Length: 144
Image (cartoon, rainbow, N blue to C red):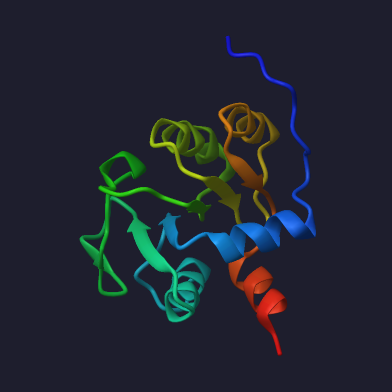
C-alpha cells in the first residue's frame, strides 16, 4: 500500500485559479450529447473559452465535434484535468484511470465528492477539486 501524507482536503481559491489558468486539456467524463445537460453545457463553455475538450463516454462516437472516447485510457494525449460528471459510485474507478494515465488533476462537479478517491489521487500527485463547477469557477475568475 502506498503511503503518503494527506494533502489539503479543500482546494483553495488560489489552487483553483492556478489550475484553471495553467490547464488546457479537459477530459469530460460522463458527457452527454444532450444540449440541456450540465455536462454538455460545461464542456461547450470550456471549449468556447479556449480549452481543448475531450469527451469521454462509451455511448458516443462524437460530442461537440470532438472524438468521444470510451474511457480515459483510450485518450491519446495528456489530460490536464479530468472533469467528472458521473455518479459517486463511479468516482473511484475514474480516479484509478486518472492515476494510471497521469492526469494533472481530478475535478468532481457540484454535488460530487469522494474523499477516499480524492486521497488516492493526492497520493499519486494529482490535484483534486471537489463539489465545484468548472464553468462557474472559470466565469467567476474571469469576469470583467
